[in-house]
Length: 211
Ligand code: O7E
Image (cartoon, rainbow, N blue to C red; front, side, top):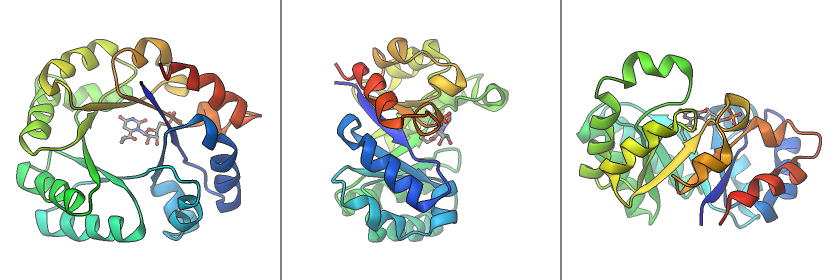
């Protein structure tokens, strides 16, 4: 089954919780990043934990191994279930995130290629492939690959095999959910759901990809 992951990039704490609650029956996980944590505080995790859905910390961790370790310890102490890290900082730094995640029975995902137009400036030409290889070597639980470029997801799948691929970029960024859902383990959706007049109805519509 392809999972539906809500990207909760909402700045108002009350609204974020309302949207998460109303969408909860139709989604599999919630991704929380800097926009929400910086405006609502890290304690937003406690508000969302009651929903019983896994919470992914999208902090795209990208520092030296020791700092990565400290960041990830704080992430799991706060109550997150998974963390997203960059791989371009090198295998030692990425591995630090994976080790902390696994010590907490959590998961760590490495960004292999991003979804926005400018991502092609640096991720193409073999870089994304190297990052996917690094994710495998570091025993990460999966990678992030762009819903805006399904052909790239297919290429990265050849490298990561059965590891999870989570994919942002459908809806607002132009990616087609049905095409992408066939290629990945989870589709990440933000604005198309949380900016909709009826976020729960939109989440339900997207949830048809879960098959
Ligand atoms: O475009 P939206 O509104 O559906 O939101 C997409 C979310 O996925 C948003 O939080 C953005 O920061 C994130 N994202 C991308 O859009 N593209 C990427 O390449 C990577 C991410 C991301 O979440 O990376 C970690 C999963």
